[in-house]
Image (cartoon, rainbow, N blue to C red; front, side, top):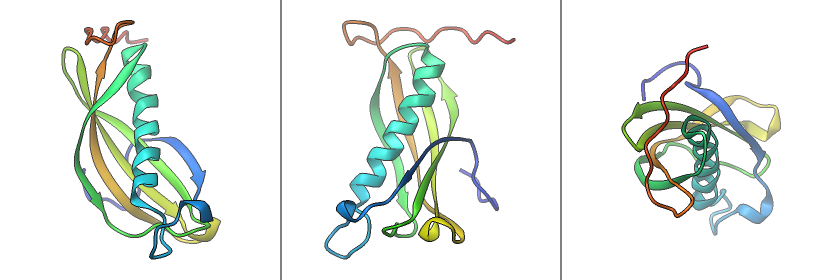
Amino acid sequence: MTAGTGPEGELMLRTLAMPADVNVNGDIFGGWVLSQMDIAAGIISGERAMGRVATVAIDAMKFIRPVKVGDVLCIYARIERVGRTSMGIGLEAWVLRNRIGAREKVTEATFTFVAIDEDGRPRPLPDVVEG
């Protein structure tokens, strides 16, 4: 991940942080943010794999700022690495404070996904068709 002025990658998911998702400090629970990032990574990796995928690792998870109730959480994703059966997905989570306020980066991570077959076993990723 590089330091920039705005999000890197494609917008994969937007959702509103709700009161049911808070921790004891009144901030949005980090596990909720992580699950939203996993959903976004699953979307982009499933598109690239042209089928089923599974999360196999979460690397370099960094919580930068808290997410508050009423923030719009926006997850941006990009494919950073492609192997034979797996791929690394770079993710950034940004918020719009109180639905309309300033945009702030709150979390970043790299997730590793593997393409799987009907039996849940790794399968080769298809070649990318340029078009």
